[in-house]
Structures are given as C-alpha cells and as structure tokens.
Amino acid sequence: MQPSVLKRVCLALVLFTIASNIARAGSATLKWQLSSSSDVVGYRIYYGNRSFESSVVVANKTTTAQIDGLIAGATYYFIATALDSAGAESPPSNEVLFTVPVDEANNSSLPAGLREISTRADVLTAQGATIAGFVIGGSDNHTVVVRGLGPTLASAGVTGVLADPFLAVHQTDAQGNDHVLASNDNWRETQASAIDGAGLAPANDTEAAIIMSLPPGSYTAILTGSNGTTGVGLIEVYDLDSSGPLLFNVSTRGFVGTDDHVLIGGFITGDENTRVAVRALGPSLRQFGVSGTLDDPMLTLFDGNGNVVASNDNWIDDYPSDIQSVVHAPPDSSEPAIIIDRPPGNTTAVVRGKSGGTGIALIEAYYLP
Image 1 (cartoon, rainbow, N blue to C red):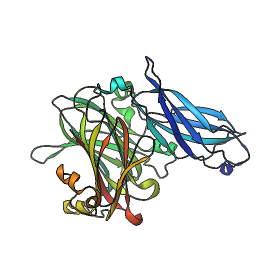
Image 2: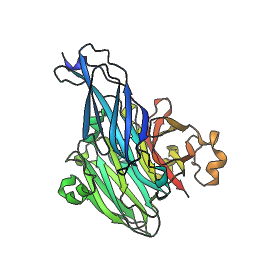
Image 3: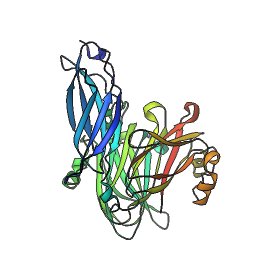
C-alpha cells in the first residue's frame, strides 16, 4: 500500500486526570475516529513535553489511548498517525497540547506570574524577524533558558519550518542603547551540558538555545534564520527558578499569515487564579516605523485542552471599562484585547487577520497582580 493512501487522523483530548501519588504523575486519555483507510492496522501516538520523544502503538479498531506517567505542571504535546501492515504512517494528525494539573494542595505554593512563555510565527527578514519580549519582576536574578526552534515543528505537521534558527537575547539600557547579551546558532556549540542538564535540549542540533542568569528587567529574544533563511519558528522562554516573582509580562512581534502561519503566543500561569490582560496590535505599530502591519487583527485564547476561552475583534466592543482601568487599552479601536482570570496551566493566544488579512502584528500578555 502506498503511504499516501493513509488518511490523516483527527485527535482529541477527552479526559485528563492526575493521580494522587508521591511522584505526582498524571495521565491523559486521547480519542480519535477510526480511519476510513481499509489497510490500517493500528495507530501510533507521539508525545512529549519538550519534543515528541515518546510514542505508543495501539491496535486497529481502538479509538482511545491513555498515556500515564506525565509530570504534574508540565505541558505535553500529542500527535497521532495511522499505520499499515508495512509500517507506513499517515500524515500526522492535528497537534493537541495539555498542561497536567497540579495537586490542589500544592497550588498555593506556586509563585505568581507567568512561568513559561512561547511564541510561534513566520520568521522573515529585517522587520519580519520574530521578536519576543519579556520582563522579569522582583529583586532577584532568575536563571532562564531561551530556545529558538524550527525543524522540531515539522514533526507536528507544520510545513515550511525555519531550517536553521539563529537566536539572540538583547537588552536596552537607560540611554536607549541596545546590547546583545548572548547569541547562539546551534545549541551544541555552546552551553550544551548546562542546557541538557536543565532538560531543555532542543531535538535538532541546528536549533538554538541559551541559558543565563538575568536580573530583574526587560529583555528581548530575536529569532532569525541563518544566512537570511525564512520559515515558521518558535521562541520559548523558561524560568528555572521555583520561588519569587516570575515573568511579569511578555510580548511577541511577528508576521501573521494564514493556516499554520498565524501568530501564536503561549504562557503558563503559576498561581491558583492569575488575572491577565492580552492584546494584539497591528495598526498601532506604524507609529514606531513598522511597515506592512496587520490591518485588522483578531485575537482568540485557548486553554490547555484546545477549548476557546475568550475571543475579541475590536477591544472597545467587549472590554472598554476593564481594559481602560488597567491602562492596557490598544491605541486603535480595531485592535483586540481581553482581560481574563486563568487557572494554573497553559493558555494559547492566536492572532489572525480578519477576512484572511496578513501583516506584522504584536501579541502582549500582562500579569495583573
């Protein structure tokens, strides 16, 4: 049988539980529809919390699989393929992700703020580079890992990925001067043992990663392609410290395309109930000299199960008093914003252009103490 005959699987997360044991391990139950391809003999589920490093195979006519031994508080990614008797696999299913709940008794020990952030966008050149800004609060240094991924996204079915990411961390001083604090092309070339020891080694050697201790302040991670290459890339920032204020606000600027090429920002909240303001800017960027901006952004928030928890087109339609009260109203009335309380776990913000519009946009998420 030719591999192309195998049809894509539609994967869903239907039940999540967390076991009450010393390891604080959790489990996820996934469900899918039987493939209509007659030669399918089974399905393979790929999963992991950094990349798709694990997999399980289930027999044909099975439509569910339970994945055990998941770490509480970690975010896992899942895809599925159908298998024929020769071992050929279908194209991967849609990707689903889930943050395993933390025991209620331990929720109060989680610090406030945003524990991890990520952003995915089309990485172009010049003003089309993908830029992630983050602010570290409090008074103590925090050890962070910043990653720039590209090839890893292909295993999730994303097409046109950035083949060779280049990552740099910047800071602007009080006089407005930009300083490059660190940069990396291939993560194994520098800091390999420290990054691997943190459990955050990228799956591909051409991907970039930086580990460093940073004092409170504002920072920018810029992702480009080596030698001017372009494609879909992902920036991730992980705070490795477990106490004290964490990431207080994040922003991402990138090109908004269509389909897999929309702008995606994600963050993980660390308190029992964290209030955040999320907004997407397009027309407002023109005042800063950015050309080719997205004319009419639309913003949607998803929880760790992929459910829509909020959406907005024009901020003034739904949240005028709330947004204005915390000084996060977008400058342009056509730009969206959302204020929402989020439980511990992952939240994903997706920016699309209305009526299929494209252009450069900015996602910002603010932790509201």
